[in-house]
Length: 115
Image (cartoon, rainbow, N blue to C red; front, side, top):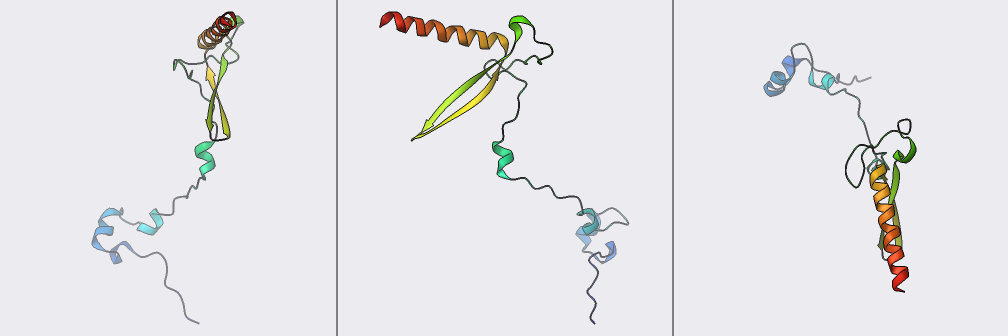
């Protein structure tokens, strides 16, 4: 039966450029034996929890730190492409959530008065 050649070769048998790159006593294939990590496109489009306010960029207090009116909020972006609507939920700090909510209520009341 015929034997296959070994996959590892001594550093002296490699080309001069590869022998110069690899440290003494190691071979290039052994250095390339690092674990391979593969990710799909689902990682790119997955929702990552953020610790920053989407409106002002300030830090958002953790749930344990929030008291009274200091409770952080959430905002929603609505985008439409053709017949498909997409909602994206974003974190807001307590002050931005309050300001955006009060502004929306004020504008709604103005439109109700105008008819």
